[in-house]
Image (cartoon, rainbow, N blue to C red; front, side, top):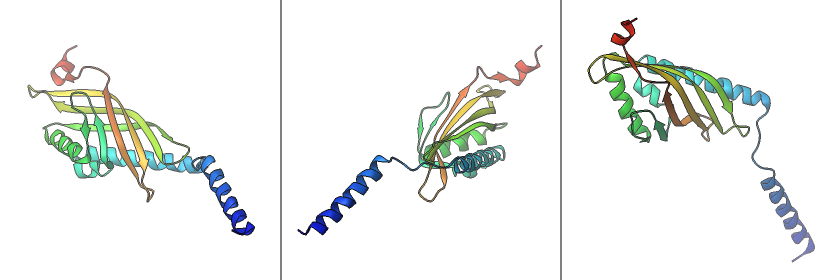
Length: 171
């Protein structure tokens, strides 16, 4: 082997080691702010689809392998399971679900983010009375290779016992 061959391969190896040690690329503050605005807009579009009863529009924001966690439900894994549950809920008379993002955080690498906020939900109880609930939610988002954001984990947490319209009428 010639010294030039060894030297060029050693230099290449050093560059690869340095690149590996540098860690993932970091977004600029401006790019983080743009990504946060983009995710807030996605979350608002998603909430609008829910308010309109558009289940297909809602589940379009989920990754295929999404995990959905909600009180009273088993852990739902995969977009098909979430679609079935959302379809059933939205088909119930009087059902509504709205939410508003409170905070959006994008990881410095720009490939992951989390959003949390508050939700309001109305759903018929087993007796048929409309039950109202409110609470908090948390979503974890990943950016796909083409730059599109998908929700990979969605969790809601009720602030307490639901209340019915009959209980609201009482002083």
